[in-house]
Image (cartoon, rainbow, N blue to C red):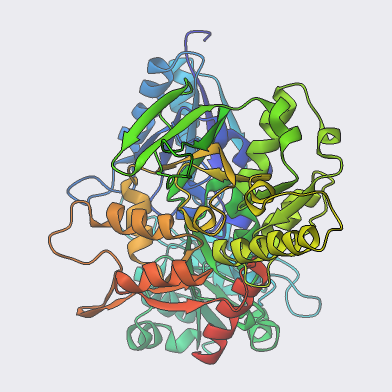
Length: 569
């Protein structure tokens, strides 16, 4: 067995990613292979190890479902191909509740492959709960029974159900995978003596944003399915508890219920807003468009001067090496060299323009053997409240935060600070200093893709490049499909907008990447929710319908999203 990988039969739950167990999530994050069913939520697939081999057994290129016997063999095959590896078999609901997990486990035992079972929350209980229907209730139902609605006997091809005993059962009956046969099931139960007026509910796509509950009775089951076009995946629940759903339905009242939102923030920043949107009822597909990486050694962008000593314009260059070098340009030259943290003493003001800049700066500072005491006496500036909050995590309070949370707003604020200092000097209250000298004691901590807005306003300031931003180069097919069917995209930067359009345009034949199909009618532009005017402008340039937060904070953005859907509901 030591030469085989270890297989985990994991229940993904009914659809809501919040219902995946902590153990299941932990295994997915380190899995080498993930063999998954078609009904597993894209949000759960997004939790998998980014380097894992993702194997969709819900459908083949011909769109036919992979046979169970082939899935069994695949699990053994991957256990053999990945010695000491982690193979996750990700199944909807619970592996052992009509999930055929037992068959897969028997195949593994026969092949000598070790396995664990990670139970999942079954749809039989969770889906009715999300519809406000308790499967048991004092005075109404003291038992519940879970029944497969599609397994047929090999002898006659009919459903292998004991209809006579089911008809006599006083408890709640829950049928899984039985929509196609429900008209027949209802008629047989009535024939066997069950009350035709028994309340019934069909619950489609349970626990997802697209959950729908359709009420009926046993005698109207077939015609209701046809009239309301009830389709799989759906469960059927029958019994007196169904009527409680009229009063206890809670999920449909969440403001973002029924919405799928794509969050394009970098992975380490997305979890906060994702959790908040999910709590409001949305299905969130985390789809980072950029990746950030702290440089092992930051670079300083120092201005070069011409022969008469005047400052030359600063040109920007992607971070490609850590060695010192000089690059000539038509306007002049500038230098890039590794940072020496001893030079922090040369600066009075440190200006941070992003949370990435904060995290990278302190990571490099600590790695160099320093701590926050080297910042004693220095003024700290932040571009906005989110960055200010990140600084506070390191015990640093900001001295300057512009009301306009943009690079331009920060630059104008610091320019006002410089002008104020100059007035103090001219009044004779301080020793003679030049405005340029004051400005040169400002340190900008940014990434390699930062524009020159701040340097244009503060031409004598110094910029340290403390991290680099890299665009995500591709999207897996399952995520692309989920994004294409989303209701809206959330953007927090212009680079996220540009890379989203680029990625979604790959492989298309003139189809705009931000258009959502609408059941055969003309596609419509995605709505995009944006932080900041620059992000909004970039989204508009690509044809998105834009909604922009009033402030450059996540609180403001979430509030705007809720207001938009509440107004348009």
